[in-house]
Image (cartoon, rainbow, N blue to C red):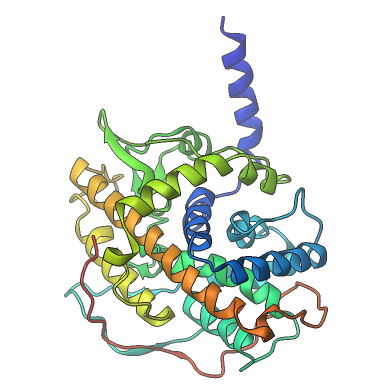
Length: 351
């Protein structure tokens, strides 16, 4: 009997009850975005970012370890169970309409809070256009590092028939240790897209190129830090595969990024799904998995390049690098004074 294997399995089952559920990109995906962003920073911006994080780590509730410029991208997911941060739960996505007759989507106001609203809000705080007693400039920058990643995930902007961005679409052939622990009756489409950047089709399953680290919810930062060398390796490979000069055509803004993601979510996320009876789990094909991986890789890298540009912009401004008044990091979002206007998109499929 392999006692080492049994011990590992037992530990995994214990962790299953305390694992972070999949959110937007998984923790590895968010750290890849942050690592790529950090690779774009000027020396001055790196210095200011370190100062921001030092203040943030001192002000926020105790962590199992201090967040660094890469692991900080996971903070908004790590704290989702905290009562004082419940209002942030709806900041991670925006439900743009799924249109059966194709793109473009109709014009319309999408009221916040949502991911577009959230990005605009924290950018206004960083530029001094707005204030929030619960969000100082340091926290605003931390939120920005996460939401820029979120808005680039195609199924964080696309909703079909109330399926919560694919969370209600069962997938029959997902395979990896984390999915096997979390989903005992099969995974879902949103979970697949959260990790699509490292998915491959093998032996009939959408499996993973490499495993994500398992960590106790009570010690998330340590779990993220333990994967740092892997993040560095994977980020370097992605930057080489998708150079900034060839991938980044324009910086854009939160609305433009949401439109891009929605077009991809509509086309690749839903339209390319294999035809399946409504009461049956969908079985992903190799063509679908391969296309989703290429798309997700590019969205991860593009989010990193764009986030890097934003960090250079806001960390270069004296107002962004000076200490803000000490406030509690317990958000109570105020109604957005100007609803986000989503107009008909005109975008090409970057994948």
